[in-house]
Amino acid sequence: MSPTSHVTTLGGLKARYLRWGSGDRPAVLMLHGLNPYGFSHLRRANEDNADLNRNFVDFSAPLPESPAYAELHALLLPAEWPPPEDNEAKLGAWIKKHGDKAFQAAVSGGQYAFKDGMFYGGSGPSWSNACLRAVLRAEGASRRHLGWIDFHTGLGPRGHGEKIYSGRDDRKDIARAKTWWGDDVTSFFDGSSTSARVSGVISAAAHTECPNAEMTAMALEYGTYPLEHTMYMLRAEHWLHNHPDAPAALRDEIKRALRDTFYVDADDWKAMVYDQAKEACLKALTALSRAAGNG
Image (cartoon, rainbow, N blue to C red):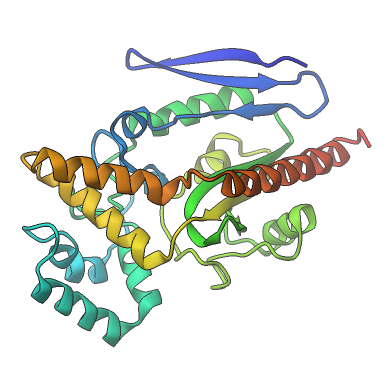
């Protein structure tokens, strides 16, 4: 069956997505490039330096506080790049005192106080946030069952797709995800995942926009390089964003290294990504078919 193309327009900007299927059988929806600014400028963050996977919090309520990030902000993004030795020594001392996991959680958990900082969740819902919600209302609100797969890179062993539960902290939902995709589904709620516990993840939108649907969600997180390298390159790119007057050669070097960090241009890595993605998608379709009574 050929996909049908759909367009959502918000604030004068258009977002295109593809959908396969109709009627009572499971349909497949693919929304690609939710962060067009990031795609255009090789950034994880959007046009407001907001990390979309930290942007889905309730901005009408008190925002999560990040005291550990506040301690680290100036060390993560020093005045110069590469960072001076004394800066890295102080950062290393913090990590030695608190541990690697605490460092990862402090940096990547999501923060809402430093607009020029890393993993900034934004000051309000972004355009991409509203776009996703519009698509979910149009395509998912009437559904009784939703399967959700996020595709990420940057954590874990090279080429391995870790199945990270990506829903609410609910035992039944987590158990159902394991039934769909296997007992090796991990979760940052119980500490079994390579991901730190984070706030404002994108999948939260489905729970509010499709409240009558039973949602089963995970992220496939493909490993590329060791975490230390990944963190360093994210720091470098954020520093570059804060220093638009940086030399062109340094800018090119950092942008190229960031791309290589999150996308391994090697046939074996690409094959591993494809094979695991295909298996996960087929398992989700099988589970959805059974839930719908289609065998």
